[in-house]
Length: 288
Image (cartoon, rainbow, N blue to C red):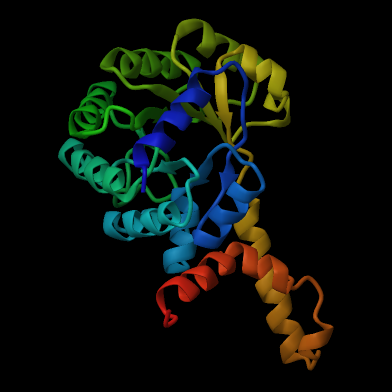
């Protein structure tokens, strides 16, 4: 697996002039579909990881090991550069170092570390809080120190706009930029005025998540140095609906041959790389 090549391809996106939408992926098959359809990069979110691995809501119940193992399964399935949401780094700054080590080994191209205080403390369920800027800077510096391949992209992430407002968002972004991260990841920006202010106050490539309809114009985003803009994680939700509807139909007596929306044999062969495996069987399991 040429991890460095895909990291350089991710960096090329950051160094470009346009905004791209990543394919939201959650397992090897979804990653291959995204790659076959031409997505430049993939995105593996912490919430989707919790859904996929545990069947639980996004409450920081997933462990680093479980997350890294699923990221590895996604990476080994093809050559799609993968951006992952590493949440708070699974603990303090030393835990962040371990997180970077594990995810870099798993083959990812980029990761984000956020400054949200996670998991929720006793008595603060449902209340979003942030760690201090000083602690956030410490986590960013720890992440950079743990990185072995300089091609691995580390993004400082904050959703301060939803907690403490624009001024604090800019202060955090500047601090993480000064710490040396490669990109800034903002969650929750809703207005062009907010993005304009953030872009004017910083220099690094920007990544956006959880935005509004006002921030969906690709040309505008590109002009504000937004290089990656998430669109949500509909592929996983669509997969859940498809499985639900198929199982329900079968339970209600619909014949397998009459089911709608089932992948064709040709598509299944494509995503399982059936042709490669049959060629290998011919090459390595057949008497010459």
